[in-house]
Length: 161
Image (cartoon, rainbow, N blue to C red):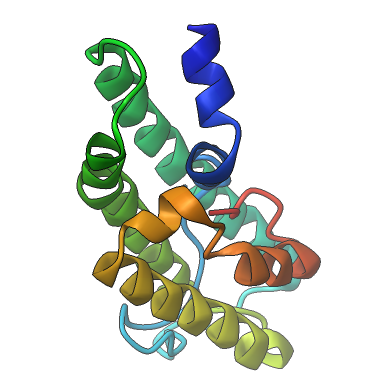
């Protein structure tokens, strides 16, 4: 258990925890899943309401991701191989993050903040595409670090990948 927790706290694991971490892991945004465009069919939320909904979405998605990872790790004997970690990234982590980003994109941000939120959603989408092409990036680096910081600076405290 300690080894699993230690592994889970750095690099890939830190990102996984932060994601499922963080609400996207668990979800915030306004628009479609490919562009981050805001949802024009509803009135813009206040910043407080947007943050409340976005952070709740992030928490929900990240908790679901973490539960799936805990189950996978409980079935794992010994330290997972790089191949196993990459498979978990593709099968568990990326779908959770994609869902989170999609849900964020469906929220209607405050009118004065739409560009900032659309930018965060678009950056997460770009990073997800890059990681999908090379899942080992999740194990060897922190590919979402820059966008995580932008999200946190906006107030999305739980939306860290």
